[in-house]
Length: 133
Image (tube, rainbow, N blue to C red; front, top):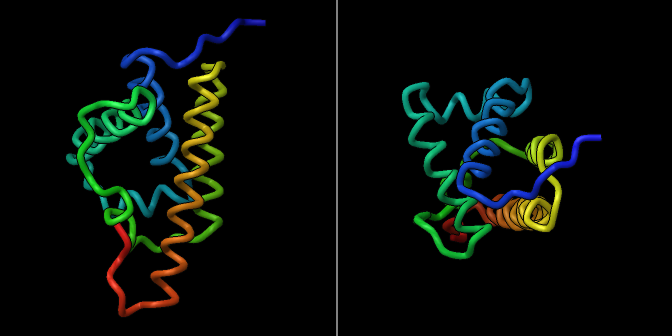
């Protein structure tokens, strides 16, 4: 059995984000949603933003600036989409990495999923209110 290292470096995060979003783009359920919002020539910028985001999540300080929920509030997604997103995230991490940082990124993605679903539910139940940041 090949021993897997933990996610530690920016190079690890870069690999993770690149491979995750490649799988997302190929996925029949969530790929079209991403394709409708991110033009082909915008992917390098999006990937750089996601690398900064996950680096900030993992290391606690980084270059990410943004409001992730606001960017996703108008997407036509439900629990099935979140299931797939979370499944792909965990699958990509487990395919190459193992350790406390890997576990933490899986846990944080799950927490983010729960938060996004809760906020979307609130927004859909109260359509006249502005999205929660």
